[in-house]
Length: 175
Image 1 (cartoon, rainbow, N blue to C red):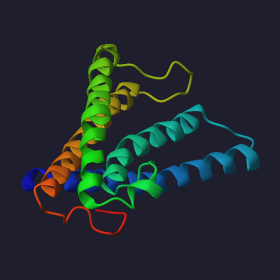
Image 2 (tube, helix red, strand yellow):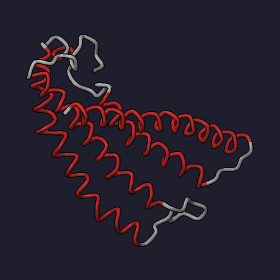
Image 3 (cartoon, rainbow, N blue to C red):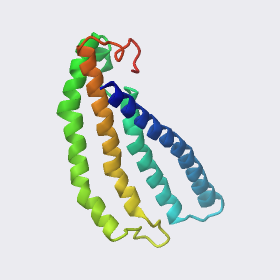
Image 4 (spheres, rainbow, N blue to C red):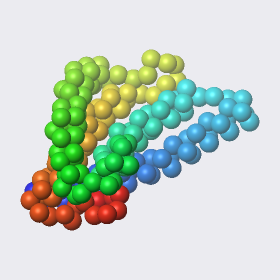
């Protein structure tokens, strides 16, 4: 279990790092768009599409990293006051009842959506838009695979905590 936890946490960390750099790229892209649109009165469709493409990948890569950092929204006022074992039980229930089924549902239901996009080599329907939209669509199941893997890490951390190892539920907010 510890090897899987270590792998999942490193994987989420790697894609979180990529997401952080993509955030910088997004800021530069938006600055370029604003400057060209308002100072040069020239707007490009591909730049606007690039903004939402980058943003989508940031969200999909960053979700697993945020999960790893214990940064997703929940009622921390209650959760943070609980003992590590009670937090572990909540995490096990959350992962088994919500995170794993929802991730599997998104992965499964996006399969045909992504495959049909790849089959036609989908690109933007707008003149001057970006090609390779199918790559962006493939990020949907990939992002949820990352979330699923990180969810398994959380599940294993919680199980180990119930078995007596409280190293994963230290007093700080982050594990």
